[in-house]
Image (tube, rainbow, N blue to C red; front, side):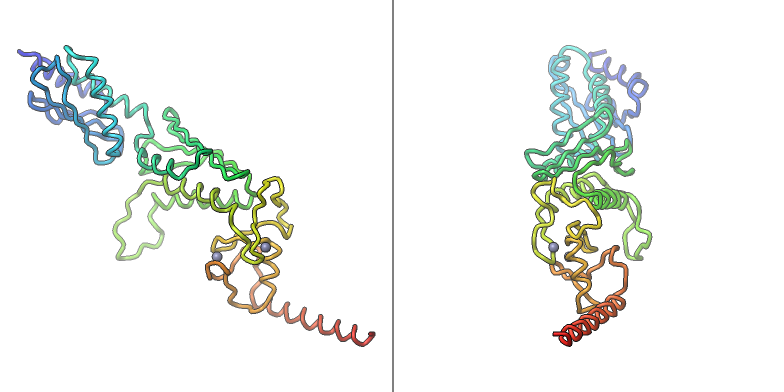
Amino acid sequence: MGFVEDELYEVKKLCEHVVPGSKLVSCVPTMVRAEIKRTAFKTLVFCAQFPEEYPKAPLLIELKSKTLSEKLLLSLTNVCEQEVKNLLGKAQVLHVIKFLRKFIDENSLVCCYDEINRVRKALGPQDELKLKQKSSAIALKVYNGEYYLTGKIFVPDDYPLSVIELQNVDTNFTPTFYKHMVAQAKEIARKCVEPPLKKKPKDPPFVPGPSLEKTLMFLIDCVKRLPAEDCQFCKKPCFPQEQQLLERDETSPNHIERVYCGHLFHQGCLLSLMKQPPFGNKKCGKCGKKLAHFKWSISDRTAEARWAHEQARERELQEVEEFFN
Ligand SMILES: [Zn+2]
Ligand SMILES: [Zn+2]
């Protein structure tokens, strides 16, 4: 038997035993084709052809995958080509299949390669995104002037079917904003993998999708956008440039509040706006959506009655004042 036939015999005998999750689809002199699968998403197909001068020349390799990134496959193909150049004169097929399985096992973030690259583009020179392939996590640090948000994002093995997990989020925005950022980020992530409670009859069947990019982009946007936003009442910036001066007392008129539509007010400004007429349909000056905030729980009617009462009282006081003057 020739070299290639001997090698094919070995590959057939050993491949599926020594490489977990591998399946030989074809193993003939014209083409070797093997599927290598860790999870439904971390799956790729290895195709190889023997050049005429094989094994003195390297195998011709092509990698395919329905789920993994095209760019990742291209660079992985390059790495494989380098690998086989070190094996000239020897059997190469099984070595590469083993190498690919090891690569998938050791680089758990392969399943979000494109997402990570797009997130990187949204970051500034000061920011950091570090990949921790061993623990399948991403460490994120986002800055805007003196404000920051840091956190770790765990990517589960069966991503994107399972949702990412936010861990150890820390920020020097106020607790109000910390709570909002974390709760909203978790909600965005959850919606990517859980079907909506109320399904519209015309909606296509729900398919879980990637949650990493959407969630991180939301957090990055919060840090990059919020410090530049103005109070929608007094039109002054809400967040002081010096983070030290940020009002942390929730009862202070300077405490920053986020209304339902997402725009910002000083607490004092919001309260004086709510206490003023017209009642019943107050709108955000920026986006025109109805103004709503959990701290302002009394109804418009009560607010109107209170206002009328205060006005009446002021008139009375004025009359008294005029009487004595
Ligand atoms: Zn204000
Ligand atoms: Zn608004």
